[in-house]
Length: 621
Image (cartoon, rainbow, N blue to C red):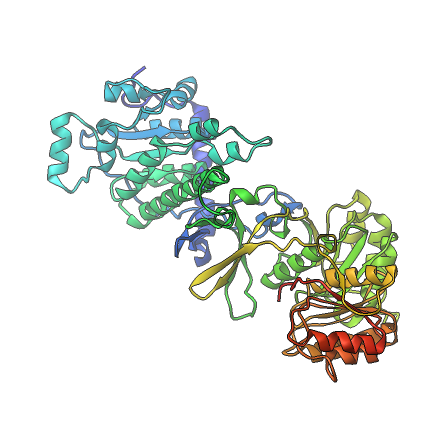
């Protein structure tokens, strides 16, 4: 039961270890070929600081999650190096795992190298079943596990052996005095708290508490702190690299420090999930206000780097893509977790545009197509016939639509895929429309096959609709702004008639459609729409009049009888935006109201017989 030294490995085990070492060498060659592989793979944002943590996903096959695109596995390059000898002259490895993936491979590899393996509970049983000799923790501590396993490794015989500095004589004297041997390797991963609390149906509070690991983080932190003398491993993918390192000669502290960095960030990410979950458990039972419940006094956001991008917003900027790993984002939808079925890797601007298109099209209940260029919707149309909706959305601004992103809130079948592939630009009737990205909630097998033949570079994304009630974060220099996600729809607000003329039912529907569109246009934003179709929009101008003129130009003669929506109130009316809109034939205007000159806007609309609706809601700038 208590094994010191190593049993001779079987030929199968030796072959497996040799193959893993070969794989490790191949990975190291790839890693050392580029400096980007040494970049930090994820970040924890919060408490006035930015911390980095190590997380990753691996690509597999032609169909891959967005989080897998261009993933560069963050492994640690292994130079020729060797471990420090234990105080007793015997090399010891401590292994305590919740995730026992590749445990037998690790145990046999360490045993082959002459390590005495010390282990706990289920980990020890698994190793013994694989033919690996194990010393159980209680044999070192002379103390049994207690409190249902809550206390088993929290003992000087364990932590003394991890934390003792080999270059400090008094440390080693203390160990010898108490008969404690040093540990050279510590391999630990933690209770699956994240998976437990995000499982379908949730988890009871007491069960959640019992899945908070205590001894594991303590051992990881101790080993990482003493990384000069102890190698700490938290990721099964690093087992081959660990064994390769131990086989080498010499010493390299950078390898040890990378492992230590990875270990601390593993614990930091774990702790952030625990803190997030516990804060949620306090909701409704604390004395704080409801707003305080939404915005905790300290917030940590674990970010997982899943790809290095070719460049950022501009070619001279380096960039990477991270996925938000907060518990609140599990199965909550969004572009970050979309599946990419086809096409070139996503760029920085691709993510921004795809996000804008998907957020906009997901707002509509009826079959809808949205075309986006530079994060602004340049075409939106809703129809029972999605083919017609697509054609109308492109027609709204075919010049901008070319090279844009096209998004649908319905499944793309064979007929729609053929239309996307073959549709000619309304500008000349000949040029086949080109898009950077197509995004939809799902695809039929035939529809996907047809789209894949449109272009090798066309990115085809399958995304889930964003859940409501998310926390929206935005960075400013030196800080972050947090707010509720903007989930308001026309059904959530009142379109109050303040003019003498009340809108007809069809005009009110047009105003609601225009309002939902303008919500996604950058301020100053104006949208002109009719019959569930955007006719023109103006965005990003320093004044509202210029945005209106752009929208009117795009709408052309179709502006007669159309609805106009503005993302903010009109500061002036006469000889300004309100009167210009009325003179051009707009039949109804929807705006938040709230200007000191609201009376002028009302009088102006009354003069021209135009309905004016106040929503009392400013949509985001």
